[in-house]
Image 1 (cartoon, rainbow, N blue to C red):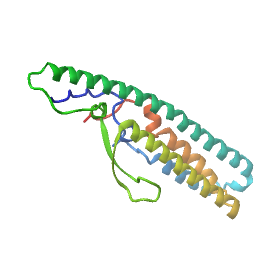
Image 2 (cartoon, one colour):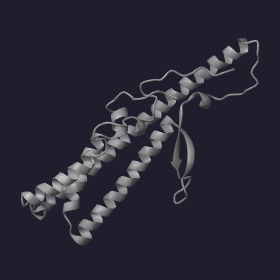
Image 3 (cartoon, rainbow, N blue to C red):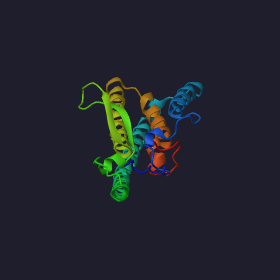
Length: 203
């Protein structure tokens, strides 16, 4: 009655777990913001003289990032459907194998048990303490996508507030650079748009 081991597929790992150990992984956006600060100081660039261009670039950058993330959402849903169909086929295969066996299995299984899962720390509701939560890989990726959009909204609110209340222009330039570099090496983008192969093995 042991369920068949599911073969590790190229896209079977959760996207946010793919790229561990790569050079400068996750640090490119930070380096970009440091470079902007150094260049503006060394070259004596007054960002206040380019305020309209900065506002336009900031708005277009945020719009672009949101569009990229929202393009990923239906791709995650389609992958979830594919994974569910594969799990259902694996379940049917297991049922046929156990029905032919002399030792009848009394264990009842569902298709969810034939899907790979990940344990992540997640808050059940906003403001509640994080608890270990078992999710399928696509559920994990969908959760990460929503978290990225929430973080983006918070960053935009802070940047806009600093700009309009305190008349700071540097945060606009920093956000343009950091957001574009971050989306370039984003795990979800690499898996669902660039179709980068997964690293590691399925558990």
